[in-house]
Image 1 (cartoon, rainbow, N blue to C red):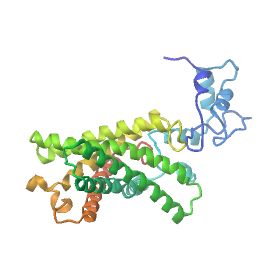
Image 2 (spheres, rainbow, N blue to C red):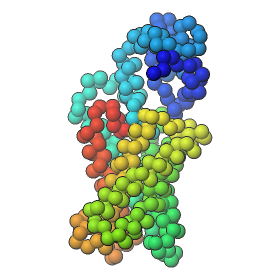
Image 3 (cartoon, rainbow, N blue to C red):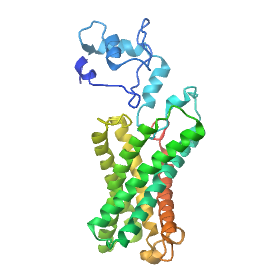
Image 4 (cartoon, rainbow, N blue to C red):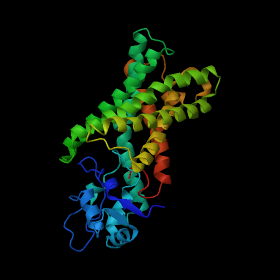
Length: 331
C-alpha cells in the first residue's frame, strides 16, 4: 500500500464552476479557505504540515481528525454522481436524517425529469429519423439507416435536455442554471445516445435472423444498448471535458453513475422493442405501445418516445428502491 501521496499528483487537479471538488471547510484552526474557495493545492499545503511536498499517513490522519462531520458527509455524497445527479448544493439545509421515503420521492422526481427531457425525446427522435430514412429509400438493413436513426436519437436527447433546462430556468427563476453548460451536457448525452440508438436496429436484425423470441430479444437488445451508451458516454467525456466546462472529466465516481444510468437507458432500448408488432402475439407490450401501420408519423414517434420512457422508468425505479442513500446516481 502507498504510505504517502506526492504533491505533484495533486497539482493536476482543477476546480471550475462546472467541475467541483469536495474539500473540508477547515483543515486547521487557522485555515481561511472554505470548500467553495479553496483550491486543491491550498488544501494540500494545509495538510502538508512539514512542507516537504509529500503527504504522510500521520499528516492525513491529523487532517481527517479536524474535519467536521458535515465535511465527511459531503465527501460521501460525492460518490456515484454525474451531471444529471441531484445537486446537494441546491439544498444545503437538507436534514442529515433524511427519511427513506423522502429519498425515494426525490429520486423519482429526478427520474421523471430525465424521462421527460431526454428519454422520451430519444425515442421520438429515433422514430422520426426512421420515417425520413424510409422516405429516402433506406432499408432497415442499411448502414445508412442505422446511422440516421442513431443521429436522430442523439439529436432528440441533446435538444430535449437543453430545452427542458431552459424552460426550467424560466419557470423556477433559478439564476444558477447555466444553459450554455447544460447544452454541453446535452451534447455529451446526445453523443452517447447516437451509439445506443445506432446499434439498436442492427441488434434487432441479428436477433430476428437468429430466431430469438420476444422476451429474450428485449433483454439482449437492452444489454447491447447499455454497453453502447456507456461506451459512448465515457468516450464523450474524454473528448468533451477538455473543451467543455459543463462536462466533467472521467472519474471513478461518475464511472459508477454513468454505468447505472446506462443500465436504465438499456431498459428504454429493450422496451422500445415493444413497438415492433411483427412479433405478433408474442409481443405482450404490443397492445399498449405497438406502432401500427395505420399510425401517422407524429403518433408513431410519440408512441416510440412513450415506450422508451416507460422502459427507462421501470429500470430506474428499481435502482431507486435498491440503492442506499447517496449511492444512486440520481442522489
